[in-house]
Image (cartoon, rainbow, N blue to C red; front, side, top):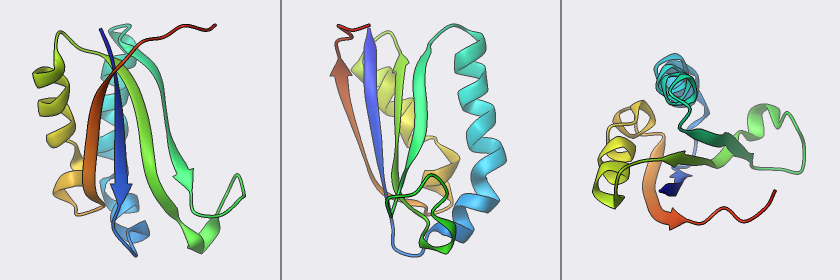
Length: 99
C-alpha cells in the first residue's frame, strides 16, 4: 500500500538539511530503484522553486510499504530526523486515484 509521509521542519533547519541531504536522498533512491517511490520533494517556505535562505517548511514522500508500522519505522529512521531537520513526521495511508 502507498503511504504519505509528511515531515515538518524545525525553524532554521536549512543547514541541517544540507548536511543530512546525501543520506536522505540515498534512502529515497533506494526506494525508487525498488519501484516503491511515487514522489518525493520539499515544501519551499516561500512561493519560489528555489527559496534560497528562506529554506523549506517540510517534505512530502509517497512510497509503498507493507504496512503502516513499516512506513512509520522507515520515516523515524530518516536522516532528517536524526539531524533535527524534522520536528514531526506524519505517516498516513494514501490511496492513489489519478493519474
